[in-house]
Every structure is written in C-alpha cells, then in structure tokens.
Image (cartoon, rainbow over all chains, first blue to last red; front, side, top):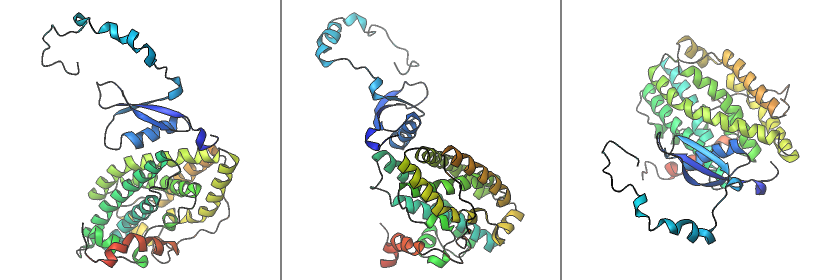
Length: 96
Length: 251
C-alpha cells in the first residue's frame, strides 16, 4: 500500500441468490483483494443484495472494442433459428 | 440483583451507543468513499445494538423509561460506557485502533453472552455477534495493513496505540456488577475473557509489527460511572441536543 491515489480499481460481481449467476454490480477502489471484498460487502450488499461476492482487478478484464461491434454482433441478428422460441417451456423451469 | 442487571445492560448499551456515535462523526469525512460507508455501516450496527439493549434495560428497570429516555435524557454521570469508546476519533489510525481494541474485547464478551442464562440477552447477543465478528475482522485487517504499511502509517498507528492503551485495562476489570452477573449466570467471567483478549491483541499487534505498550497506568471509572473523561460531555451535547432543546419532539 503506497498511497491512496494508487489504490487499484476492482470490479465487483454479486450473486443475488443461490442458483443465479454472479452479476456485475459496479466497481470500487481497494488496496488488495481482501479489502476489496470487505468494501464490496459494505458498498454493494448493505440491503441484502447478495449471498456471494467476486472481485477482480479491473486491469485483468479484457473488453471487446466498440469499433468491432458491427462485425462481432450484427451477423447474429438475422439468425432467428438460434433462439429457442419454438419450444414450450414447462412452468417449473425457472431462470431461463 | 435487578439494579445490577440494569447497570450491566446500560454498560452494554452505552458502549454500543457511544462508539456508534463516534463512528457516525466520520460520516461524510471518511478518507475514501468505501471507508466512509464501512464506518457508517458499523455505526448503524452499533446504534441498532444500543437500541435493543437500552430498550431491555428500561424494561428491567421497570420505571417506564424507554430506550429514548435512556439515550437522550441521561447526563454524563448516568452513562456506563467504558472510557475507551468515548475517546475522540483523532486521525484514522486512532479511530481504527480504538475500534480494534474494543472489538477484540466485545467479540469475546458477546461470544460468552450467547450462553447467558437470560433468554432475552441471549437473543440480542445471537443477533449482534454476527455484526461484531465482522467489526473485529474489519478493524483487525486495518491494524495489520496500517501497522505494517508505510513508515508514516506505522508511526501513526504506534502513536494511537500508545495513546489508547491505558484505556484497555477497564474492559476486563472486574467490578461488583460483573461479579453479581457472573454468579447469576448472566454475564461472562472477565478473567477468562482477559486471557482471550490478550492473546488476540498480541497476535494482531505482532502481525501489524506494532509494539505492545508496557507499564501503562490503566485508567478506569467509565463503566462504574465514577469518572468519565471530559470528552463524553461534548459527545452527549451533540447526541442529545435536539431532545434537550425541544423536549419530546418526534419526527
């Protein structure tokens, strides 16, 4: 820990309940992973939002470039047969 | 016996209320946003514990005083918190050190209170211990990081520890009320808590590379109400101002 201006940024992922996947909740500053978990607990789960927390330093996330959005995503637009909309889902299946 | 139990509940409640109020003074002034929220979270936990305990104290006393009466209408002489928790925030090092020195005691105290013979106190302890476990973890982690941090953080932490050490003796000092509570199976034996406390504090201080002060004259008088430090009066002036200026006001 050098000084507070050098604290790295962390991305926080919260699992809201068992069975669901972790979702990005936001980001925060912390000196190390342990403190990032504690800060995340205080900043993002004060109102019982979660049962599990993941943190990862933001610099380890590789993001797709907005410039490539057209080539990455547009080709999927006209392939309607990839959606499972032709099946009837039983009511018992949740979280699809 | 009833009077001793009332006094004992006041001690528990006042410790939580006064330290909670101290932490609330950081609201909006924390060193970074995340710590501002962390400290006010702990403050809210403690004020919540104070509510349960003072409400119960009022019931035990049986003369119709509520948690609000007890919090807002007792003067310095009526407060039963230990001297440690009323000490001013100082710098972040002082706040963290005060918190750690108290949390370590409070943790073992509430662990023991979960087995109290009094059902209501047991229920309050069961709820509080989860919060207190987190408080101790929070303050321990900061002790280690700041003690074993930079040259400046180490020096500030050592200074805070040297300043506050003389208030640690009172935490496990055995008074008449403690003896009555122990005999009644309500409160824990403070001798065994002192053993656990010393062990925990030594371990964390060692990891934080801080020197445990020796030979300090231990201050006392807070939990018996004999003699509070000058700081409590100022704290209560702020805590109680609205009810004193506008008696019975609600919003």
